[in-house]
Length: 413
Image (cartoon, rainbow, N blue to C red; front, side, top):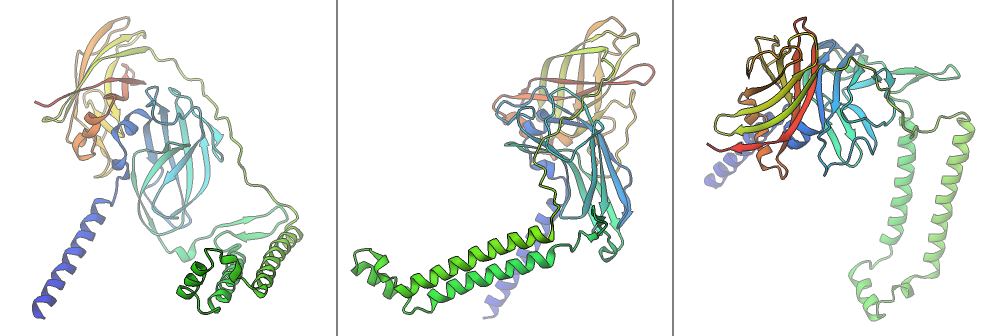
């Protein structure tokens, strides 16, 4: 007995440790779960940030940033142009209330479509509801394709949820608390339907014998179970049907009388504005891309043409929410320990591209993030195509984002 007790205690300890480890692994960065092809070739996110990193319950935070739907969108994934898309915020549980969404200045209250290759600037205003520390992501949900997850950021909410206020004023001047409004009505109707269902179940349950004797009786009748239903059963069933129809009709009439003015659910789409932007002075063609697995090194050869009037230098390469920075051109520091930024991991061979010049350059993005963020599985992609964003900077510090894409060759030695 002592041996069994000790064995049971060891098993319990192992279960507790296993749960703790799994919770730690799942603590942040849910974007790891997505395939590299989805992260690299669907939506390119950049300049994503929070207006504040710590706030109190009832205070607001603005999630800002930009995204570009990739022109290298995978063929096996439902298109962001053909279907419906919706900009959302991913956060554990109902921790915030969304107050407003703007995409290129257009209210993002409904589904829309986004054009591949176009840049969209967004702002989402959230109101803190539940205290805690949360990993927050912008997300574009695409019909038939699922969520395209953006970079995650930590935010901390302090205070008490008991103090949270979420009220609105109706057209007739009534003040409604959206945290509790309609709850008693929904609970009452749910309890009523549960009672009707249990009554129906209870009627047949009381008609003993119930299971095996009835099964044998049906077998004796050659499978014709209808002969076992008595006239009384049919009358009870008709009574339940009438009660159900009366409840539905009565609820409909009561609701129309009590709420004569209503707004239907909004199921239409909106057209998101396309903003006119400064034309890019740089043209880039990916000549070759190779990922060396042992060194966790991404090498990309590019042919770059500068149509502008100022020299251009590569300051950043971003792919799958990972950012590799050329510190000699562009200074970026991680905002926290989980910010996916390698501040000095981008090496460029070829120097600045002068005005009117076409030159081949080679960039190296070398960092352990390729492995730790599970991006190395891109070598098992059926089409072996990669994509990302290059950010060029001129002498005055102006930035020019350009998407690059093409086939990738894995190197195993």
